[in-house]
Amino acid sequence: MESKKVQNRNILIAVDESENAARAVSYVRDLLNGLPGFRISIVTIIPEPSEDYFQSESERTEWMKEKNSSARNIVEGHRRLLTDAGFSEGDVKAEVVIKTCPSIAECILAEQEKLTCGAVVIGRRGISKQEEFIFGSTSSKILHTAKDCAVWVIE
Image 1: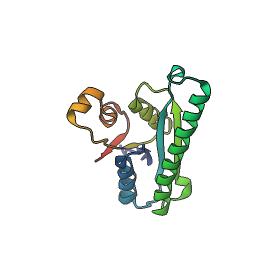
Image 2 (image 1 turned 30 degrees about the vertical axis):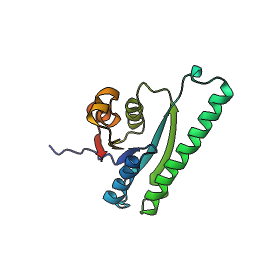
Image 3 (image 1 turned 90 degrees about the vertical axis):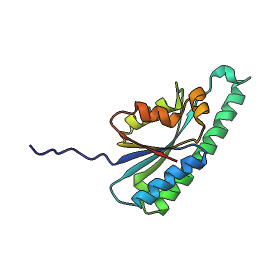
């Protein structure tokens, strides 16, 4: 019996403002080199702060506006890096997601599922083993809980 498994060429690159996230984008750029047939979603997650985190709603709104603007600049910069490398404009999208997150890892995996991505690419933050033990590691959580997708953790 011949297997006709469909290859999923949707890739989610989870980014933040770190250098490791930029390395993850560069890795995908260098590895795939504009190869047609791949769709790439560059996503950054902004955890929505609770209402009591700020003294007023206007302070909260201003904070969200600044975070969204900064994140939009980051994902757009990464998107341009990939389109300049030969990926078509239609195959690379940049998205800022603002939502309540139990953890960043869970929100990234929810986006992976929503976008039906066959691979998640994330930069390793570079924290020590002691810090990882105390605070946890987003890349480690994704690596251990992801289902039905490949996970690329870029150093």
